[in-house]
Image 1 (cartoon, protein in one colour):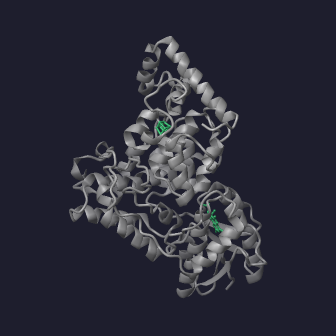
Image 2 (cartoon, rainbow, N blue to C red):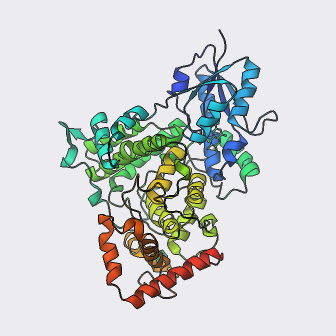
Image 3 (cartoon, rainbow, N blue to C red):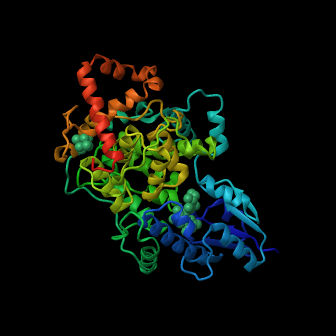
Length: 509
Ligand code: DLZ
Ligand code: SF4
């Protein structure tokens, strides 16, 4: 029997992967490869690279223990080539193989590379998701608007999660209304489960430090789980200790408390160490046992079976050009503060600091602080996209691009978001304690001390009035502007011009 190669990528670390299921343990060879190209096509955070490489090494051990032959390339192997395709070609020669079985990668770039490889590569659907791409297309076909909420209801019906006699448990599909509370400091609050690096991880950390040490982001202390068992423990710890408070404060931000009630398991889910059905089953059990309220359980499940599946469906439906879209024609360079340079804006500083330390920030920091600022300041969405893809341990293009290009930057022209997610400093002040220790004044709408979010908010809306002025959901804000005194309006626009001028000149904002 001719040997075939079975490709397993760094975010495909699941025993039930379609490529593994289609292969023959007795004859086929699993190919796993640590390659420079995947670590550097964007400057991934060193913690993210270490997570992936260490988890790959642990997964290769699991596969071997399970009887697979694994041809594993380490980054420092002298004969290693820099790319996935390069490694497939090398292994094909080594094992006399001409056919490769793969699971479709989560990024068009790699799908294309496999299609163009001088080998026969069979790309199987990635079935680690609840909704197949065909099912998503069927749902989307003929709809004028692709709103997550309706898709989510389909997924609730399909999975049966939080359903009672065909109706949503608790009488409502969505309990977000209860999920907008401020957070209180709590020294006794649990934090995500942290793990000591084992010998394999320690070796990977040295390697990553040597090869990618110049990338933005702190490598140590490294505390992520790198195995399925570790990830499951981290999830159970969340479900038992933090889930109950997840709903209430899911949109809150607190200085010095990066994680609040968030689970911080998306990186494990997205590299395949956790399975979405399993974690939702556990969440439902916590609710059924009366240990967590419905708003927490529903809010969490919506992220996993609703939002996560919805953005994936859209990424593949929209096609390879999605991440290059720029519907608002934004072209300003991403300011250096995103890479850790000084800023006087405390909210941005807090969000970037935690990103640098942990390769993590929670969704409101991403959407309403760094994303909101980039959108209002007119930053080139491609640069914003590259930044998010680089710095977050859970960021893979299928999930990151719809969130950034679509939801956050409105660069897809409104496929995902029905209106741009912009807000003045008021929202940040309401949901956080950041403004208290900021050099700017959130109460000031004009003048040198005025919060830049207050200035840029109006400037953005006015710059794009042609596009958004007729959107019924935005009518009230434009009417507020029109009612403002002319001198005040001018002072706001002058202030915004000063902020944008400072950004362009590389001055500290
Ligand atoms: C993100 C990443 C990194 C940093 N390194 C590797 C690697 O060395 N080998 C590998 O197989 N995969 C890696 N990955 C994940 C791939 O980039 C990922 O499969 C694509 O981003 C598609 O989701
Ligand atoms: Fe951010 Fe403005 Fe608040 Fe400062 S005042 S923390 S810039 S929202």
